[in-house]
Amino acid sequence: MDYLPFEQPIADLALEIEKCESESSDSVESAEKIRNLKQSLTDLTRDIYGKLTPWETVQVARHKDRPHTTDYLSLVFDEFVELHGDKLFGDDRAIRVGFASLDRTKVMVLGHQKGRTFQDRTENFFGCAHPEGYRKAMAKMKMAEKYNLPVICLIDTPGAYPGIGAEERGQAQVIAENMYEMSRLKTPIICIVIGEGGSGGALGIGVGDRVAVMEHAYYSVISPEGCAGILWKGAEHAEKAATALKFTSKNLLQMGIVDDVINEPLGGAHRDHHKTASQMKAYLKKTLKDLVGKPHESLLEERYQRFRKIGVFNEAGELPA
Image (cartoon, rainbow, N blue to C red; front, top):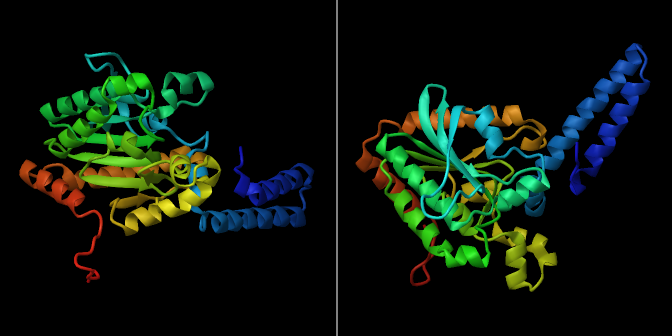
């Protein structure tokens, strides 16, 4: 297990348990000591993860062992068939999309993919999609609409790719077009932030009837480092920016930006992929049951109103009721 900096007390206690187990005898006292240490480890982990700071949440969301889109494709869905290309430029590996089954329900699944090894991460542009990735996603979502398939979007990106080539091929325009087209897509859309939800890169596949976030993920208008660079002129102020941005799952739910928070196993999703996938699958099944079968007019109107009501503002200095 790779421990994060704030997890050092957990790492120390886990090491002590490992040492006791290697030296233990078959005595009742030894078994009781190990049992007490394991209970202490559970209590300590619960205490630390129960009061994570926003910056610590970012570190958990970026953990190298955290489940990615391809992990959920194998653990949550069946019969995934990947679709490629945008029919204009190429196939962006930072976004994966294809047909799949959720038990007996046929769906279209798409999501950002970061990769684990350096080679994979380079191929996937570290989860930062180019315009062709968003065009691919929209083309397949329109196919899903044609065949009346629900769309499931898994968001995990620090932002859209910031290179010159991406800008030349219309990065900002294609993200805006995706948001517009998703707002009027006549099929249910469920969006889940599974790790990082950064900037327009997340919004490009983030307009849905239900928007949820994993417990230790974040969803923000900008990454902490980007915000720190703009406001404090240095990425070393990222921790301060993370606190100011109010982007943790608790903040997002309180402000009405997301509809639901999906609980993670104790210690984060990276500790138990299967349990995390089980939680996501239960949420998707429940939500699809609510959305599938709704008249298209009601679906679109509720989606429109959902995003219109985000945010609070005052007029003429009056406080909200």
